[in-house]
Length: 267
Image (tube, rainbow, N blue to C red; front, side):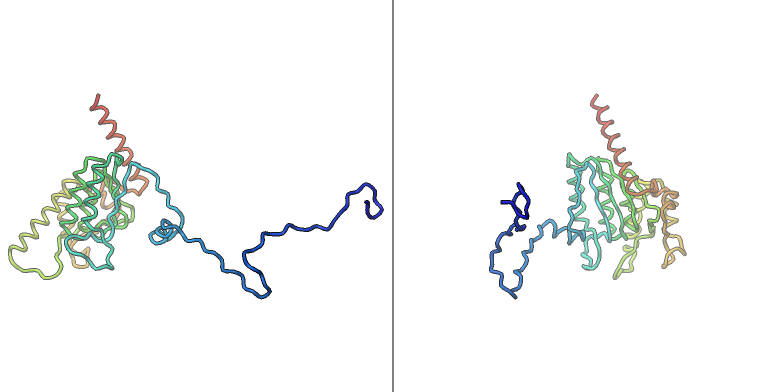
């Protein structure tokens, strides 16, 4: 049947939108909406928020380079207060052993931003780094002060950021010091250990290093020196001024050279 006097036209009916799915509850006038269901975040997302301040997944590409960070104060035999940012040497040493044994890791990048700390703990870490058979590159960011200096030069090649600084000063003791000849002899021997290590693993001479240590007028206590960026390179303490890009590129080059040398030995 045609409408409005038009022939052979389909019948037109008012548009009836599709009915949405019926809700699980009866909707009555004035009744509040049901509470929204909140989806819980995964455990990984919560950890990212705690540690990194973001819920996004952090890219962790598989790499043959391991980054070892030494930040804050190097904690040794004494436990420091909880407000101190520390690197515990008993945590670093097992990592270095595991890296030496790992067949997947071919190079190690050591990032330093440390104020120094325990002398024997710092020397222990430095000796571990320098005795590793794999290529190692260190990068001083911010600061590599006090006992951080031997750790920085322990790598096979070292970098320092342009604005980073390194404080060179004699060994100091905290707390009660017994003023007897044996105490001073112990300090002298420990000082000699640090000096020998630094001069053996860098291009600075012993005379220049001791001159920097005992220079007056540079620090608050009139003893010691501060080297910034290129000054550390000019003194022969650090190999090159650079950042993360230069350090990683150098480490990759050293890894390739290591592979080539091993291949030549096999042939």
